Length: 103
Image (cartoon, rainbow, N blue to C red; front, side, top):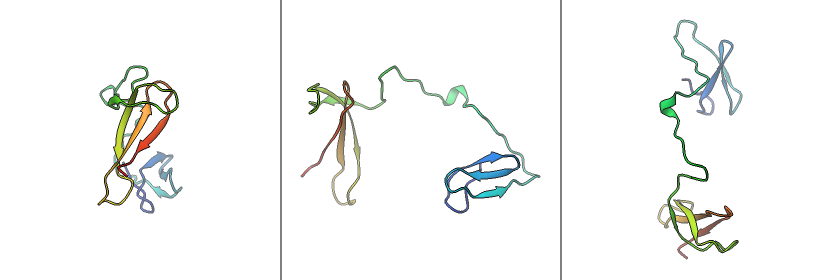
């Protein structure tokens, strides 16, 4: 695995060069180095979820869009570090997204 010297993104191997998919920077591969290039993930790396399963926890919350009383939730720090996190909800029925602040 190689990382771009310009932006730090992971580079992909293309015909003897490493190419950054983010900024387009290219680097020549070291011909003496050994590389393993894989197009597919190994089975042990794949996590399967059921249909409609977002992997997020659910809670009782009324959707302002459809009135459903169940929602997925997660928290994210979007303001200064000395302020509380913001709670985000996603309706399990219509997938409407809304947030709840502590103000």
